[in-house]
Amino acid sequence: MTGGTQGTETTQRTGCIVAGGGPAGMMLSLLLARAGLEVTVMEKHADFLRDFRGDTVHASTLSLLDELGLADRFREMPHRKIETLGMRIQGTLLDIDLSRLPGRHKHIALVPQWDFLELLASAAEAEPTFRLLRRTEVLAPIRKGGKVVGVTYRDEEGHVRTMHADLTVACDGRTSTLRAAAGLHPRNFGAPMDVWWFRLPRYPDDTEGLEGVFGVGKAAIVIDRGDYYQCAYVIPKGHDADLRARGIEELRRGVVSLVPRLADRVDELTSFDQVKLLDVQLNRLRRWYVDGMLLIGDAAHAMSPVAGVGINLAVADAVAAARVLAGPLRSGNVSTRHLALVQARRWVPAALIQAAQRLMHAKLIAVAVSADQSVGPPKAVRIITKVSALRRLIGYAIAIGPLPEHAPSYARA
Image (tube, rainbow, N blue to C red; front, side):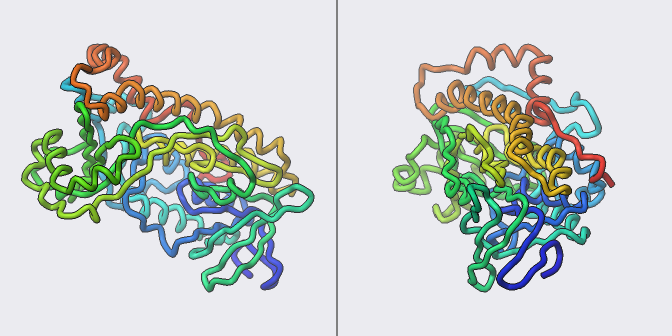
């Protein structure tokens, strides 16, 4: 076999197996390939085309693309720039201006995730040690003496095969097969809401940017995607079936009550077939590794959609993992100490962001879905609207975040 694996039909080996071709998996694979290491990505789908995935690429990730020499290619992709974040919270307007961010990128980019992943994949495919196996589903880890030494997988023709590796990295999301097989169970912090995702038309004379409205009993986020709006409508946790039973007209009324300017287009919602459910989860593993296997991204810490930080946190995990593990992989001596170093590096940012999301859930989202007419905007929101330094700090926390990662020297263009 070629492109980062060798062996026969019955015995295959690579340096690193990456399970899952999402943001964490593709970024890690690109960096390891640029280090000259054999890496094989196993992606169970034929392509990256899944609608209503996180599409926000924040300033920290944009700076990383600059360092990797991918900025020009990124700019060629269709995307929108978000320079202000407008939120109306129980009648109080909160504007977050990103123009004061440090560095070159003073905005958040909205780009279809499939385009972003194809960008990373095409860059990685320029490296001779990289291989992407599409329509390939990882089934279980292979263990030898208590250590993970590879995986069994189902290939695109439906055959079950095995591949061995010095390291396996689980980037297979919040329902991670490898995590379950390893007996690792995340601590669940709960969430008061789920989210309905749907599209509505956007007209040329509409205002640009991102708009959020948190009312009493309901909330919505309207994301400008150029020729359409990607809309998130917040519902109480576990109430999807009950609310769908009330009919699509009630959803249309709810949208218009929050964002009246959409009244002339909500009739485009004709069926709940157009409305996708996001089961919101917020959890984190206590330990992100076992001997021979590391978990990063959503497999290690599922994030709430609040502030849209999931992609960027997953990418940062991948960068830290590549920096720590490239040397040990090159020498064929990856130990649990190295894997623990990756977790130690990335645990604090994940924990800090999740703590902020939990606070938002408790103080903002829970109020929005409670229908308690007596509750007004949180006191903290009223203070933030009056203090520009706090608004700048929030902008930094969202667009850059704690402990941003930078490309290793070996991977820079």
